[in-house]
Image (cartoon, rainbow, N blue to C red; front, side, top):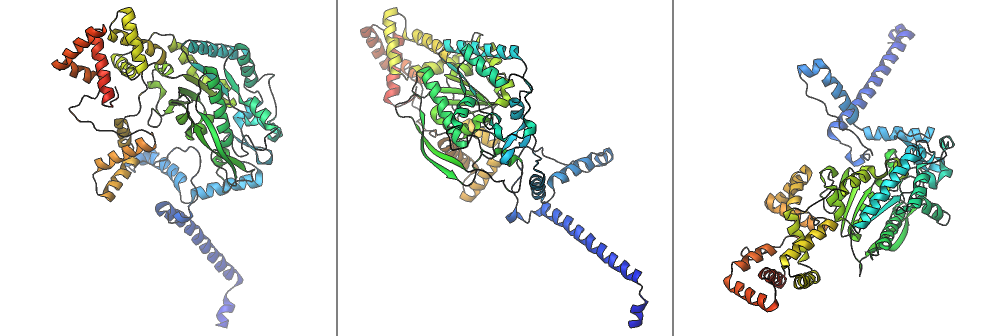
Length: 562
């Protein structure tokens, strides 16, 4: 044995060691790739799963393997893209890489994010606006201001108020934390200065939160815009909403519901959207930050009037909207996000504004509010101003259905009905004729009746939502009821808990349930018509007017909405 070992040369030993090392290295690499594949296929480490990456990602899919896809190269290309986007532990590796870039080089992979002093995060669009790099000149700004003033004056004639809200810019409120390399003004004037000065001179209704925040910053112990976020803080969003509501109340002389803060507490963790920028950086953990305060509040609606509001805004309105402030302050609220998506209590999810009749929408609302952040001042109104001016001038007439809906609504109002009755005596015109006249007048100032979401709308939305429908099927199986029954229960739940509406009430089939049905029933009942004729003579009214009054009485007595 000793002789054999002596025959092995140092070179052979070295080769054996190299071979062993290569095998171990190959085994380690193979094991790592095998681990990635197993994780991708089976997600065995769900317990320790890293949070999903934040941001917008285009879903990657590979096409099936065929001779055509193989030889064209499409199979290889799409498969490669799919594997790169879906390999095991991808989220962990991406976050770890981003964390190292941030810690070692103070850099980020997030598009448009600039890391400022003391971990203050900025977006490049706000820095460009602050540095006046994209100012297009006074003529274009003045033209926009003039169109806004024209729209404001036109809406005023219709009894409506227009308000422009200039949102605060983090760069403008906290310039001391901007990196020195990004402080380079290139123009004598900025969009902000041009609009704030122009609005004041021309008489446009506006709120300047840049100015308000600058004044408040000197006295406030709280950050008005969070260190790791870009919008007004969650607390300041509530104060901003109340400022907007108060302005609209004073301008329209209407006592709108108000926000009442019940408590304010400082928290160790940031509550969304106070961390919206840092989330987009997809780090393993957040950098150090100053604690923020958060408020609990309620809406004071006692002896206050609710009106309708249409808000055209960018992302600054989202936090206010998602806290249900508009829903509880306004009778009907609509939020047109960048004038590209319609949200509100009349829609199931988002809807495309292109399908809307803009004039009808404007007429339906008492307040039109345009909310713009400084990074979007060059897109003031997001195209809504021009569209509104073009449509507001065109004549509009109600359809027969719209007219009938308004007539039914008028008939619910006893005071309005009495006014019409008085006018019939003075003008010697039938009740129905005056009812139509008043309905047309109302349409020209208030537009068609706001339609709430119906049960059928909710059902249709559920049936088009594969995830929701699958949940209904699972719950139906667990509760041993039919899918249709479970669907009805989910519709009831959605109406009561999300829309705050009462579920359907079933009335007897043989009982008239609308104003038109009652009128038809009266005319088909001889005894009732005899009474109508007698009462019409006694009161000096037409038979049609008397039928209308009896129909209203019948609906009220039976607690049926006209």
